[in-house]
Length: 376
Length: 76
Image (cartoon, rainbow over all chains, first blue to last red):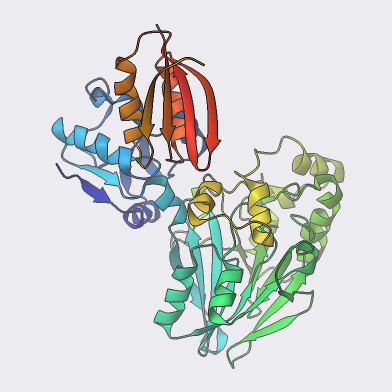
């Protein structure tokens, strides 16, 4: 018997359009508690597939007959089996999520943020399952990519479709939650790969050091990318001002949270860097800059059009992490009671330094789970 | 360790390793040990959780050249 599949692209559209969906997650309870597909109007049931091998009779009462049900597992095999059993029980609107949570983790949704002055364009790539955000700045036949994921084909193909050449690739810092595709894209396209040298002390490959005040122009038009040293999440963390309008904050400042300083192992040392960046360096910038972070943590941080973006002035008013007057209280917030660290974050850092070279399957496993780069 | 039965589930993707494990468990008695070989990355977490929910005891796990090995003692 064949079962209808639902793609992660279709699920993404349901998330962005606030549609209803009943998710029947058949992974283990631990895996489900750790990380699941989030949607404003999604409802859930979690029963591991191995408790359903003898039949689904015991749980069918907990599933709606009048709603679309998407069965999801780790990779799409077990969900197919369970979905087939449900079809045999007479359920009609049952789908198996193609590729499971692995596909969900890897899906990138390109969303246009806006046109730039002088005819350029700015795109945000929303990695919706993991909460990672990367960017493509396009102008006059050239493109720059910031904080790319390891799904490099998506960017290369996207640039090809737009008919632009990727000339510059940046990472705002050495990532600990996901494997960067920056180096690979640069190798493939001949682009320059920029990294902040303070984060790159142990890297095993050549890169272009990115320093405070560096200007990189994309295309012939004047779409400057201006690097701003903003340490705190890592020692080298660097922000970008693009086209005098956008502030790419990396993992320093998010919409509803701020970066955590402990993933490279130096929470206590970097607390004051983080405070200085958020409370002094960013304060000196224009309130009208639109903040484009490298992550989101919760679906509430998405705007209606699917972008994750907010005015800096609004964040200074509303983001709790920017409104803690007492330094000691701030220190406690960003160093104590932190959420668990991202899955395999040490190995991910080593991969991004070029020290280890896991294969594709291993890279997937390393990236399982949410990004967890923030404190709220 | 006294292994009563060995199951080769290498090359099989989820859910097959557990489907086969469950079946193989029916062929042994309570207190006897089943040895399982699998290559699916998800097998470790799933077999651990499955053994627990079924009242079996996961005695030992090992990874050898990409092959995960499990020893599960059948529960009462």
